Length: 131
Figure 1 (cartoon, helix red, strand yellow):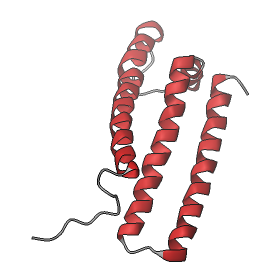
Figure 2 (spheres, one colour):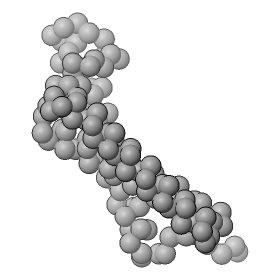
Figure 3 (cartoon, helix red, strand yellow):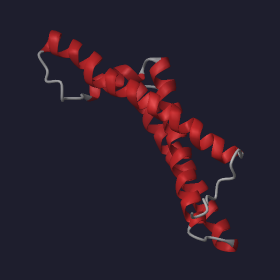
Figure 4 (cartoon, rainbow, N blue to C red):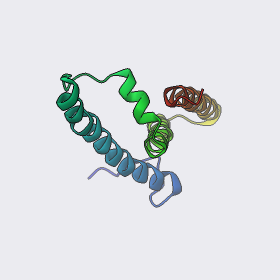
């Protein structure tokens, strides 16, 4: 039988965070999907006659002005960024990335993550009406 290989150390911090963020993301995606495609659209159809497939800018702005929703979506952004980048980084390590290349990739992914979170935060603040 082949040996199991993973760049994650079983029981290590990154291994644990990858699993925790996966569970969080599944829960938030389910909440987001139900809220957008069933709860909000059912109310919009009843009062305005809109189609359920339409997600309107004004509705997004209204949801983002709710502190709880804003906080959840911002946390989703940070968590999804970490989960994705951590997964890509470990996949590259599994492919044999080592030494200087490993450090460069880690730096590039860290910078890209920070820029993504910064831009996502900016968009969220604009959508909420803060900026």
